[in-house]
Image (cartoon, rainbow over all chains, first blue to last red; front, side, top):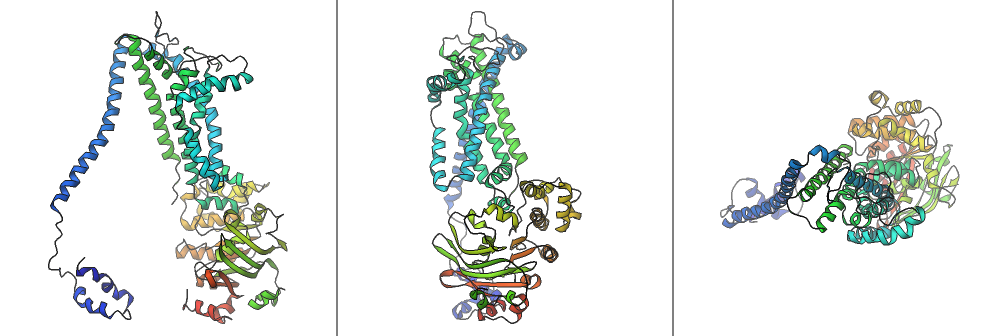
Length: 341
Length: 270
């Protein structure tokens, strides 16, 4: 510090007028009030090694950041490269618009639509489960739950997200189908889009609930009070003030859940069956893009053959779908976000 | 008349005016903290009552009791009688939602909903089951709040796009739309610039003809400018808010009964 540490109260004396009893303070004032007179031993050059340290830390951190970027780039590169070889053998239009997928059969056909429709069907069912239940849980946690209940429920909900998805897979096969779905839809087979979709939906409830709740809790208390002051009930405030005010985060949570459902693998591999068929009936078995990749990898395959290469084409398509969903979610957040101070 | 009131010198006993809200022995606790102790005063109809006093003396807390807003704070406990048209709003068979439909509130910081200007006003009327023409209602409320000319061409724009002073007038307009009897204002100008403040004050004097207004302010000039009656609060023992004096504004500012009031208004304290 040195003597300059004492200058602050002395310099501010003109603002306060004379401070009674600060005689010693005033004693210093004449010296420091001149300003600019440097203490004799002032050295501001710092330790010599400090600049070097900072530079090394900066480089290390840059490498860590670059590594994750490089990995992503590497994955995309491999997908593109192998898919490119695949599309030299199978025309891309046959792949995108073909309606039969028999990649692992003796007479293979590579029309990806059955896999896409299976993926979309299961995602749709999952969202029909996750959006209402997740949003209701979020409203309960954010608006209705006493602090005590929230402290227990929120971590419990997030624990649900930590259960390995393969457990959800056999939960679907051994409980959801035989104990629930069969009683409602007697015609349902052992493997179906419906039982897989319900399990994926349960898997994504915590995602929707947790992110929506965060965004609802961020709505200023003043808005709720404004609603209550007009004679609104709790339901009216929750549903008509808080939810619309938090809509950007809520929609983003829906889209992220959708993206999670599209990419979900183990549940569908176990519960949806492995029959790639183009059908609108959710009680039928279906195969998703991810389900196919699992099935193909668990059998024998010759590297470089079209069935092997088709994995990369499917993987690339999956990558584009989830990328698009994530981009949409970012757009939505940016577009609907209201600026509160 | 309750004797406690005569002690603090409520003007209403003498001047023959209708009392719309009558507060008796109000005590408020936040958990174990006794925030407000034994407050009693009357709010005369079609007048402006100002609540003044140093920070933390409980004036906002008292204000929020009049429309049961403190119900929203889990640890708050309110004791005592608050009679609105001779009904105790704290009694168990009173629904706070119903109270708030008669006693509106404007807050310290403008808090328009993230909806259009039009919806900001129509929403409250809608949840209250308004049956009439909404376009007329929106126009009438905006005119009453002296905001119509500034926003009539952009009713579908977001209420958040307005300036601070306009937002506060929008919040007043939105309160008028539910057609309340009493309007509570909790430091409505503290976040506004002087010009917007004067506009709101003009507006309050305009509204006084149809509504009863209770305003919390820590701006003594404001209380002196707009109010008919002033209630002065101060800090008692253990930082408990107590009512010191309730009088006609002119009397309280020129010839206060209590030394503490005089100290406060002459700037020796607070």
